[in-house]
Image (cartoon, rainbow, N blue to C red; front, side, top):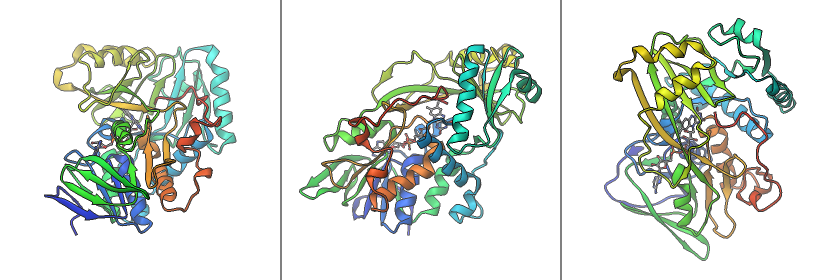
Length: 399
Ligand SMILES: Cc1cc2nc3c(=O)[nH]c(=O)nc-3n(C[C@H](O)[C@H](O)[C@H](O)COP(=O)(O)OP(=O)(O)OC[C@H]3O[C@@H](n4cnc5c(N)ncnc54)[C@H](O)[C@@H]3O)c2cc1C
């Protein structure tokens, strides 16, 4: 059977249709098919993981202070650590690097918050995060400025290949992946959803998962929903330079929101710009010409070797890419059924979708197959109308 292909015409029936072939939709399709559903995923673009997922810095961490996020991150990291065995694909490598996540600050006033974050993580089962003093930071990571007064660190955090992760989930599943096939409407009847209309034809189904990333709101509108999603462009840049220590952790300056990590022959740098305005979904988000310079300036504040890098750069040493973070009112994803639209499920609202995708794909598929009740689901859409939704307390969000 063909599995990942561009169909000529679509006229089929499926137990479940997933809309969107980023990491979230693909992981969801993996789990739905594992639970025995004949699953079809439709992806508007020419390949899987070619949109926001491809723009990601590909990092993962368990350092969350919100119990729900820590739980899905921990579960997902276990999958990453054992991906070949988990999928049964012996020749599959997602190139996992567990070089740690290091959140650094040069502000004394932030120290109590950092210590409290570590204590909270220990309470909720992330027992291996440590607080480091400024001296300990410089001793372990000599390229960090001695202006740093404290940090949190977890060695088992790190990064991986998003492309291999997505392809691995696709290959390990029995789902069909229809490329260049765009969902253009969702048909309903008295029972609920009954079909997905695409630009190549119709797929009859009683179960639809909206995993369209920044376009999840557009899909939601097809069944009359107004989802609480806010989209903000985020950029990253690759800079080729021999100066990057290859064994460094993913390093985040908590004061100015910049980050960097080593990447083959250089470094990946980014900056979460607090003034970037929300926008509608962008078909082709672009990076700014001057973004690498902003990153170098921001990263060099507490990692001084970045300061001299700009002088010797050629255009070919630099690459900039962009995508959109999808924020929800409490910073946590929206997963599960929707009241009043039987058979319609959400798996969207991510600013950190890669690192939690194995667990949230499972949760979505368990909800859709009745293995899990929505009352036990902390990510249900209904939480925003209840009092249970609160903004995450974590100062570590956005990276
Ligand atoms: C600069 C940057 C850095 C990031 N760094 C990290 C990081 O280090 N770690 C981390 O975990 N996360 C990171 N993220 C966030 C992460 O990339 C996203 O949360 C994640 O990729 C979301 O995956 P997704 O599958 O929901 O969305 P996408 O990858 O956008 O996939 C959605 C898919 O739906 C398709 N689609 C849309 N509409 C339709 C339609 N009508 N019919 C069919 N298909 C449709 C799109 O073509 C797309 O392929 C970063 C994001 C950015 C922008």
